[in-house]
Length: 202
Image 1 (cartoon, helix red, strand yellow):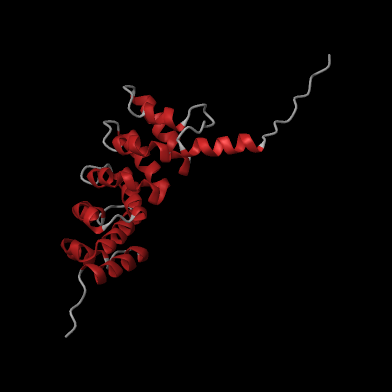
Image 2 (cartoon, rainbow, N blue to C red):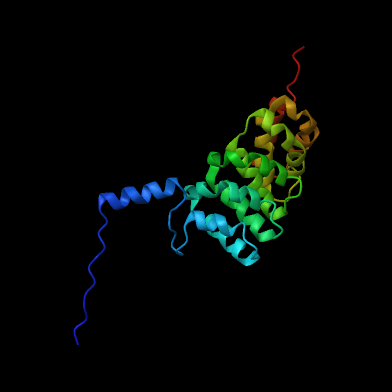
């Protein structure tokens, strides 16, 4: 019995261009067979397990998840903890491209789970929103300075630095953080204090 050998797949330029275009419109088909658009739709579905799977899958694809930003922003308020976690992780992976989710990320700081808080604060740090948008995040960032995860505290201090004097309510928390056991947190907090509460020259 002779086995037929499969021919190797050869992708032409037109195919590659089409794939690139699909990324831009959120239609890229992932390994599991679903497009970014389909996964975004799953995030709004009634089945919690399907929403968890969709959020988790989107957290793995990096820049290709841009087409799902609106759905991921909504998922930050999902009733399921793991959906919220993977939605926050997905947005953090997008970096500055997650800017349209800024308001949702700031709102999430008010009630975010400890596991997801790291990704929420990291995402805000990468987005670096304009001061007028970032000011409402100050109370949540103050709480994040007390988080058990040193990386969360570090990113919270970085965010507060960018807010500047409008984050003066965080001055006391930043002073405490400048004595943090973690060196990176101490340095970030001390740096933020220079912007948040600059010393007056005599």
